[in-house]
Structures are given as structure tokens and as C-alpha cells.
Length: 284
Image (cartoon, rainbow, N blue to C red):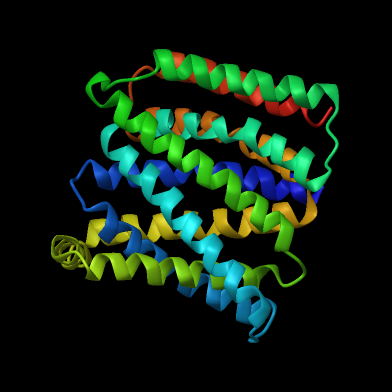
């Protein structure tokens, strides 16, 4: 049941990451500078973890696919970080679960995974809850189309990168994870260096102790989530890991309402509970 443990850990991490992003986005920080800063610290944390557990080595065969996954991860993460600039974290995190039907389809037809009737019913419950939330849980109608487009792109990219990770992850999970994070950091800094405004925001961010603490917290969540998804997919089926990790909206609704004072909590909590019930069906 290692896949279940890491799936739940991934769920909790995914709930906390948009809350940290939302906190900083409300302060008007540049998403490119913010992303580059927390990815740098996450890379350092992962590198130290890899040396301590697996030792230092280089598997050159994983570098090309690591770069591709890094590009997909960076783009998927950046899209929903930008989305948190316009909409509350609990809403954003709940709609990210819309990648579930696509992931199940990919798992069945490309990886020959088998799912029982309960798992399909669980997926339908989660899909229905996300659709209900998209109609009822919005707080900023003026940005609705923009946020939905951002999240649609993030969902598609997330499904593709999960498929790639499941296809290539093996015993050298931490090295694979660290290589991906390193490439994500390089991509993030390349973009920041190409934008004078983002570079200026990065300098301001590094001078503020409160923002630096938020970046540190965000990097810890990012590191935990990245390690969890690689290890969960190493030990479990793509579709089942995705379904279990889709419980994250429940955590984000509860924490978002408590920590950020977010609105429409009843509607979002109802949707999150339905998502959790759908996830529980998959382990029956």
C-alpha cells in the first residue's frame, strides 16, 4: 500500500501548494519570479535528499525524458500559479481534478491498466463534483473564462506528465525526481532573465523576510509533492494514484477557508466531499 500512502501525501501537498501561491499572488508578486525562487530551493532540497539516500551518480539515459517532463511540469505549474492570481486556491485546486478522466483513459488504453466498476463510479462522482464547482464556486466572474482556460491547459499537461513519469520511473526515483526539478529551475530562471520586470520582482522578493518564508514553505510543499508523485506512480497504477490524490480539494477547502478566509466554502466543501467519496470507491 505504499502507493496509497504517497498518494495521500501527494494530495495534502497539492492542497497546500496553491494556498501558498494564492497568499503571495494576492500580494502582487510576479508569478515568474515566484516560481523561479521556490524551484531553486526545491532543487537544493531534492539534491541533498538524493545524495543522502541514493548517493551521487548520473543516469544519462533519463536526461532527455527528464527535460521533457520538466517542461510539462513547469508549464502546468505556471498556468495554475497564474490562475491563483485571479481566483481562490480552493477553487483552483478542485478544478485541477478534471485531469482524472483523461488519466484513466490513458492508463487503460496505453498502460493496459484494469479498473473495476467502483473505480469508474468514483471517477464519475469526481467529474460531476468538479463540473458543479465550476458552475457554482466562482468568486470573480469577470475572470472566469481566463481562469478556466488556464486550468484546462494545466490539466492537459498534468495528465501527459503523469503518463511519462509512470512509463519511466524505476528504482532510481529520487535521481529522476531531482533531474526533473533541476531542469524546471533552469527553465524558470531562463524566463525570468528574459523579462526585466520579473527580474526586478525577484530582487524585491528576496529582500522581504515574510515573502522569503512563504517561498520556503512553498518549496517544501513542492518538494514533497514531486517526490510523492514519482514514488506513488512507481508503486501504484496511474489511474488509482490519480484518483486517490484527487482528495486534495477537501484539504484545500478546509485550509483555504481557515488560513485565507476564502468565500463560498459550503459549495466548495460539498464538492470536495463528493470528490473524496469518489476516491474512496476506488479502494473498495
